[in-house]
Length: 350
Image 1 (tube, rainbow, N blue to C red):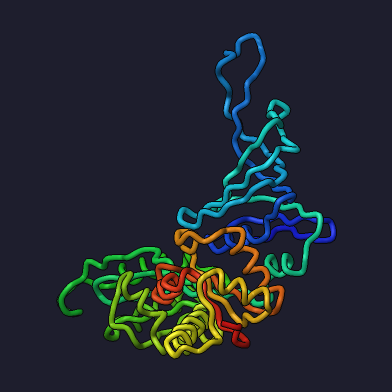
Image 2 (spheres, rainbow, N blue to C red):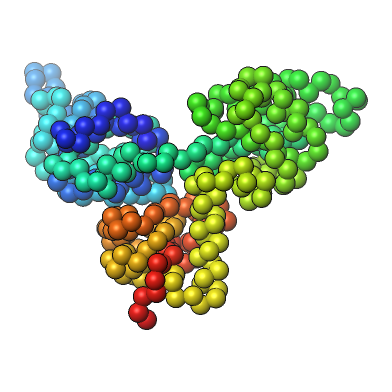
């Protein structure tokens, strides 16, 4: 989430949504009575000599919406905010009745609140910004390029080399290496770490090419999965060598958290809770040490407002909350527990 201006004393924050994880943060931030200022389109009926009474003109307009309801649809990456327009940049926009705006990645907005709690401020300004990794799973045939931000993994593209046979029998791999390096450079931002893996020694040639365009210390080669393409990208984050390299990152912490949850459940350890009713009870009691929630939790029929209240209660009482990518293996494990599971500081009563 890119924050351009934040002044909690004056009650506002201007930001741009960059990812689906940011939408979860916004869903926890936006509450009834807040004001969301953003740009959208409305149908305006003009009352002039040549206008048709039954037709309106759709125009772009900046609106300030007093929030009545807010809902997150994580499956299609959007938040729908419904409320009453209290300000508009076009005088022709009616302020009667309810109106709604849809927020999605790439959307810019300003959020006004009467009071910014410490939890709200922490959501906008996390104490530990998550590491970002660009993952390259490559051999002479293809290169899968993925992006890992927090616990969310996306496979960006797969590049085919057009090479075949032994190195001495085919054309130079230089154009292929250059294309991979160019794609990675376009994705890379300051502070990103690039990790290269794949069967054989060709990955070293790719890493050397990347070091010519990026800072050498930003590029690492890991051993492990002998897969390439999208499958190789997904397998890389489970590799012990990658986990050692990314120690302390959200992705590694998440895998360790889910592994501990599965272990405690299988052993019948009472210091674990899963499914929203039980985790909510633990949150109210202040018993949650760390919680994982799947990004497909709403498809499992949980109550959205209760879930948001539960996550906020966990962090207000010193626990940690992790959002899990349901397309990844450990995300699927959390989905099997009702979409939410938590490690407890102490056992709750049966």
